[in-house]
Image 1 (cartoon, helix red, strand yellow):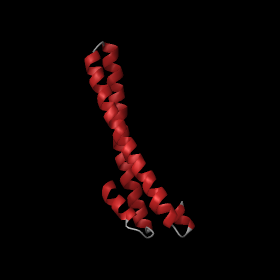
Image 2: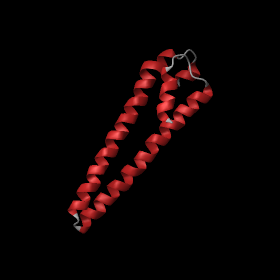
Image 3: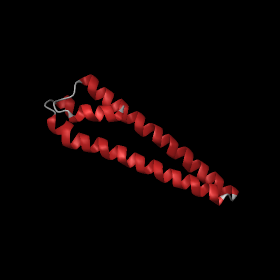
Image 4: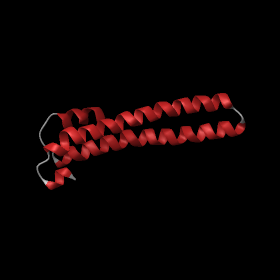
Length: 97
């Protein structure tokens, strides 16, 4: 959904209220699911390390790194979209907020 809303945001012109809400929800869901995965994976890593299972902790840490890369990519995408397309193309105050 976030990918489709990014296309809508790059299409030019000002977004309607509904389009802005959909963009917000799309990125909120994309980031939220990865934040949850990051929290769970970090917890698993700590538990495995405390049990002495260093190999499993290593796998958890590796996966945590993948999640962090995905989070950074998503955040960079929405920030870039806001900076380059949406804020500069907004005509009224409500669209800029």
